[in-house]
Length: 244
Ligand code: NAP
Image (cartoon, rainbow, N blue to C red; front, side, top):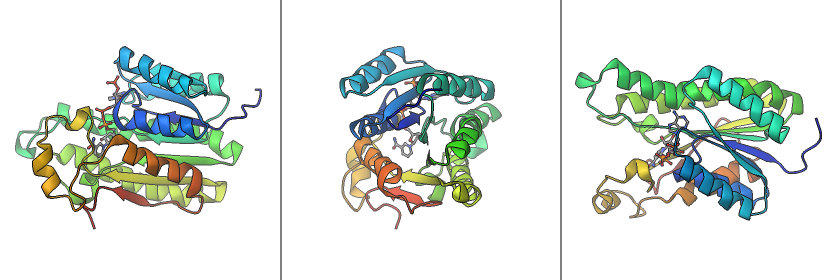
């Protein structure tokens, strides 16, 4: 394997929204970027082009993060293409909201598989490489809902709380290998995921009086990747003051 001079970031669910902003922020910091997505080819191609315009190497990979074998295969492909992965952002996620009394197994499992099991599949596929290179930064995209709970989101809150447990445990296991593992807990961020919410009404309840932008999360990702070298096992709230 030849050396790759640039650092490499792998970000799941980065065709749009928070993941895309993270990809752009890390590309601006000089990272080559592998982005994953589920099905939106047009958005993924657009993001890759925007990344390349920043002068870095970028490529998209279409696979379902809820599928263990697909994750393993994609990581193999990404390692063949980029030679290493320094930063893994487990970001891809979905919602299937509904009150618990009416929540069926399908919606429970879809959210647990896509939002939590995916982080196991991706991290499990990449971890030996990070141990070997004696460097790694893993960032799990949790949510304030994983800390506070939320009516109508028992599946989502469980997955996001699970990511926090995973983060803290892996930080303890992997610290001696110079691999840092942190979580980010965004509040309400304006993306496709939140497009149907009443922005003005929600903003009234946020101390900073506005919803977050994807770039607000991307800056936290860049901090954890580049500057927070003594930070591991933490859950960084980026929520305008909602959870204090
Ligand atoms: P988004 O705009 O809906 O984008 C979701 C991204 O994930 C897209 O790139 C999508 O790919 C990808 N994706 C979805 N299911 C996937 C699957 N099964 N396999 C592979 N990729 C998949 O979401 P977002 O608002 O940016 O959220 C990103 C993360 O932040 C999620 O984990 C979310 O739970 C978390 N978060 C968001 C908020 C918020 O307010 N927005 C708050 C807290 C936490 P396609 O484009 O191909 O569909």
